[in-house]
Amino acid sequence: METKIEFAHDFRSKTSKLEKEIRSLLKQNTNQADKNSSSLLVKNVPTREIEKKVDSLRQVLKKQYSNCLLLEPAYASKKKIDEKLWTTCFYKHIGEQRGIIQHLSHKLNQEILAEIECKPNEITKNSSNNRNSKRTRRVLSKVCGNFLNFLDRSGNFYESLAKKLDNKISTA
Image (cartoon, rainbow, N blue to C red; front, side, top):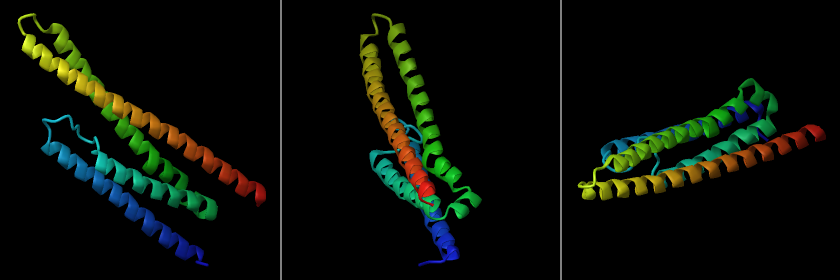
């Protein structure tokens, strides 16, 4: 059985490493998006591969934080682990997703306006704008769907954590 000091050191080491990996992947993605600025990649929109890796790391990090809350509540309270859990695994991601959705919504609005303002003799340009807006709609729809899924999973996670904490308190 590890001591509280060993637990704290091991916990800080693991969570710090996971947080750095997440930041590194997202920074790597931003650099990739900058290189591909002509595509629909938007700065801070993770590629599918990076999104899966980051999600996997967030899952491990959530497990670490929730274990700390359940196993060492005094340490967790002192170190504000609940705030770190919220900020690192949920709040930042929610902010990123809101920014992406806002950017894509603005882009879609501009494309739709371009379609509306297009003169009849500019048929080719109009069909190009139409293709762009359809593509942006698909991307926006997918991003919104993924975001709603994330919010649903987040609610389930906190509901489960609350039950575990309640059980721990009632059996203490």
